[in-house]
Image 1 (cartoon, rainbow, N blue to C red):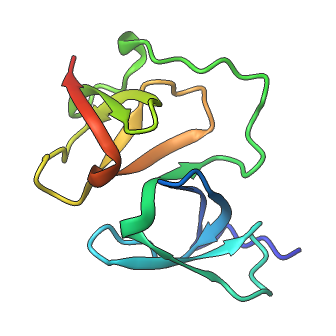
Image 2 (image 1 turned 120 degrees about the horizontal axis):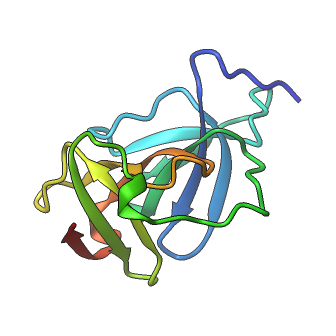
Amino acid sequence: MTMSVVNSRLVVVRFRDGRMVKGTTHDFFPNKTEFHVYEGGDESQRAVKVPLVDLKAVFFVKSLKGDPRHKKGNAVADAPPQGRRLAVRFEDGEELVGSSMGYNASKPGFFLSPADTDGNNTRVYVVSAAVEDVRFL
């Protein structure tokens, strides 16, 4: 398996219908309608085309395996100091807490820096259409 972390990003892509794709991407931009993911980080294989309209969120991660023993934290005190602190509840009931410098309900999405800095997620691109509620903290 070829794993190129240089000039790529490790991502876990979560779809609104519950599907998930893990891998690397070189072409994610929030202003584009689609991007590509090399599943498992294997860039010798053909990349999967991912349309943003079908997504819940794009999780930029430290590792594709994560740490199943990690206890998720959503404490506001742990949130990075940049941006507005908020809690995002997705239509599937999952809640993420963190901060955002670019939240705007009328935009297609926004980046969230997770409050749980010890978790696997470094940043999350939240797709607004998959959000049920946003609360400012």
